Image (cartoon, rainbow, N blue to C red; front, side, top):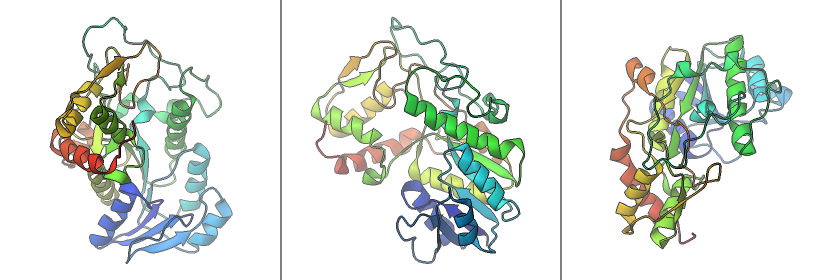
Amino acid sequence: MKRILVVGGSRYFGKTLVTRARDAGHEVTVLNRGSGAPPPGVGRLVADRDDEEALRAALGPRDFDVVVDQVCYTPLQAAVARRVFAGRTGRYVMTSTMEVYDPATLPAGPVDRVPVAAPTPVPAPVAVTEASLDPARLPLAGAAGRPSGDRSAYVYAEGKRQAEAVFLRDPAFPYVSVRAAHVLGGGAAEFTGRLAHYVRRIAAGTPVDVHEAPYVTSFIHHQELAAFLHWAAEQTFTGPVNAASHGALDVTALCEAVAAQVGHGPLYRVVGEGAEASPFSFDRAYAMDNGRASALGFGFGHVADWLPGAIAETSRTAGPRG
């Protein structure tokens, strides 16, 4: 049995992680700002993680075998956590994201775009490995130029990169960053609404905005990600690790899978270079290699096996909005 603290853990795969760890016999505690009571049999601490003194007060003398941080988005949050949990945990697992690899949001600036004239979908040339990015070697926050394009995408990706860098530059405890693929499944619990976007539009016969030559991207089922985080908490490896189901898809393959469920063929509207497209249409390399986690012993499923079920449950809850 391990003593596990989950920072966040009040919704979606974080909530599933909490119940999974509890059911495995671990002593689980959730720390959040009070957003919903944890499941029965799970302890609860209430504090704002940004408030260092309040966080220390809420923790009191407690220590843990593992901390799983679901809601670390900035280097300031990482710095607070690093100070507070130094000496309190034997292992720290941060839920990061595949967005850290996004070439359009890296401090060096966007990469060359895929030519609009490309006649067929172009796969990512190489799925990125963990070694493709070392956040500790990137410029410190505020030191790099800002790329053009979607500011919110940059802020999210750079925040995660810099948070990883804080933990990696001068480790205070054994640290893992789980770089998660796009998470799908769960119906209404999938709060981003990205899969619902496709279900609604295709069911209504509304065109989906796509790039002329969309690249493949990686996905993971929400239950699989919860299982992966639970597994990572019990292991001894450190460093970044990619978490993605086998079988990357481009946006047209995703639309075809949705169409098979809703009974309408997809319609497409091609957007111009640099224009905003639908959520999973990318004009740049956007797939991850899951080889490290597989070699360490985690058995990923295949997107083709769970995607129909994820689409079906989304169809039952998505509603008619276009």
